[in-house]
Image (tube, rainbow, N blue to C red; front, side):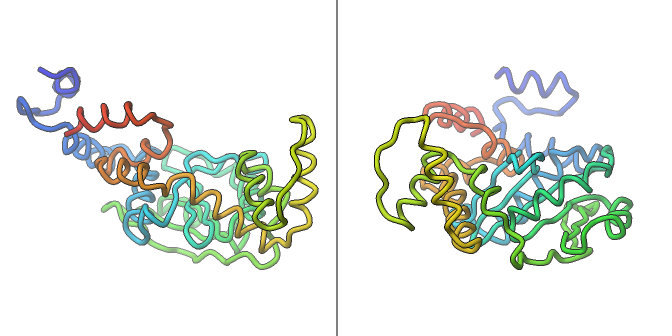
Length: 254
């Protein structure tokens, strides 16, 4: 018996000899959704409904646990714009939302809290009215309680710069402001930070979105992510893997 089958049987699942792993993992996620709605259930729902439902993984990027200012947003989606999704499950407290969401409002066009019905009522009264609220219902669907308000002059360019990798901000500045000189490593960050500060918030946001989209919308990434079962797609986005590792995973799953 394959090791994965053995582990599933040990967990009490009915597993047929030789059956593929992928549908069994989807069944596990379904059971979690019904009986133990942990953070991963919420993340999988957002990824499936937003990136693979409303948009497409070929045009929309999903970032998992992305640092933003002093906070770390659970999920961020980048297509033509940027959207943050902060998750609060039945097992979470809402205390940190009042400090997290202001950080997100500086960086994203739209900000949502994804939660359950009981917490949604509290969020309506405690959070900035620009923050949207989504509820994950018992059937795994997302319902809008309050729509998010798009950014209107609130984007902070410096926050965006700190979220980019060196190669990303170098490419963006070179594209928008022209070729830059070769510099010692110790001078690169300050040089590009000064140039980035000359961009308008709108220019900086467009460059930021383009860089984030490029992280996961390359054909080799999209092919791997779409081959994963829905239950593993968020992990696929969150875990850096080589081409060999990706193929090994697909071989095990299918």
